[in-house]
Amino acid sequence: MRAASERAARRRRWIALLVVGSMLLATVGAIIAVAAEGGGQGVTTTTTFPPPPTTAQAPPADLEFPAAGAAAPQPLDCPAEDGSAPRLTAFPDGVPDCLARLDDGTLDPAVSYRARIRTTEGDLVFRLHSEFAPETVNAFVVLSRYHFFDGAPFDLIWPFGWAEAGGAFGNEALGAGFTLPSEAPEVGSVPTPGSLAFHLDADGRSEPGRLIVALGDNAADLPPSTTIFGLWLEPADGLRPFQRAATESGAPSVNITIEGIDIEPVVDQTA
Picture 1 (tube, rainbow, N blue to C red):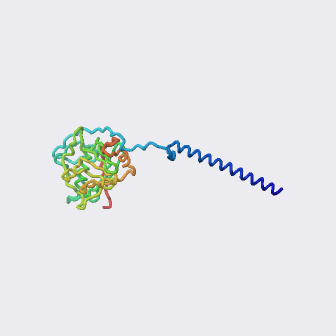
Picture 2 (tube, one colour):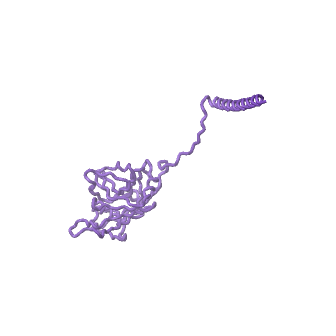
Picture 3 (cartoon, rainbow, N blue to C red):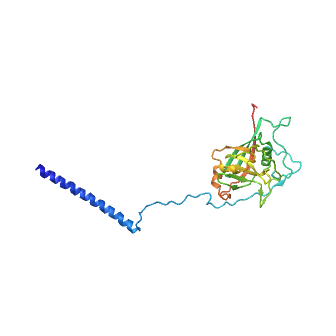
């Protein structure tokens, strides 16, 4: 009886193996048939997602340039610090020296300056380096308080490079009407993200009417004689709108416009 039971168990195991083998052969045959229908090539199933939108694919934004303001009278006084000065956009004779100074004419080391650039995408706060670039900072302070940059769009924004605004009124690129010598160190400068500077003309002189904000590593392509006169302080994500608006052509996909610039003196009581 034991021998008969063992023989029956062996038959059941063989039957189970034959069933599994038949199923495997059927599966392999189906795969071979599908491959044959596909021209002898293996069949691969993939899921295709649409490419994510990029700023380079976005159409350029419609930009509006402000109308030119009045020409500066002569002699020109320093603008009021409370923002009540009239809007001036032409300074053919330059601007007066309006930074805080000691009785001997040197810059007051206890006074530094901050600039709040108010844009349609939020505010950007910069510390101005009057100790390293006094002429450039003075020009920026005077122009800002005379509302030179108000209404100016950032009309050039390069990916991880820089953004430019100012100096264009209506259909004309008039600038501020004067230039300044570079105040970059002799070894040159490399703008880091958040650096504030002015554009250079063909002669290597700063154009105070053309503002530059460095956005990324590609800002290192700016000329080494570029005067860096400010550094971005806040907010932490303040440059993101510019990166989103940047395109390979430089024509921004979003209209980011300067609404105004507030200059705040900061007094160090311990100096």
